[in-house]
Length: 244
Image (tube, rainbow, N blue to C red; front, side, top):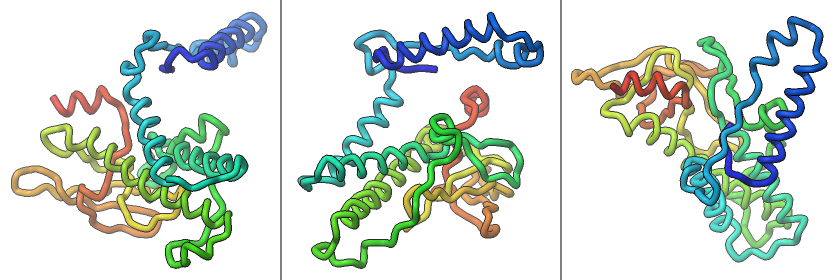
């Protein structure tokens, strides 16, 4: 676990260590001890007053703050309205796919930050599209939902672009393999809905570079350009080996 030196993180590290010590002293079941105790969380703190060391998550925070400001603009909201909007944006951020749950080619489930926070994916009640409604006729609730949808539209596109940049275009050629779980870059996707698929075939060109793939989803099998898919982050060592 990597984080900055905020007091809540330091306190969490202490609590987890105390829990580890308690389990180590009191558990008598050999099977539970053998499974749980070797898996103690190792918490790594970045140097104090060095936020640049945690550049990956700091960039995510900066991006979210920037888009919240762009979305809300000069809108005057009550405390309850701000709380509602920020809670929904928090759900959007914590719904993002991180890694596949399994290597099963027929399994499209992923691990999200929501799994780490509440033990399951974060979902939302479907809302109608407000693009066709005249802005001046919005109720306060509809106005908040329109801002949430605007944030989702901008942030989800940025997130997919960052995945493609970190996992694809930073290498000399695209590394996409059969069986990879990918995010599909599509338009007009509702908030908290991610289009997922498995690569079932690749179609290299004459230069041996793959620019077209066949993707299997829950709704069918079809071809997509590699510019429209983003491979979920997997093992960094594996990527480095392939890049070398």
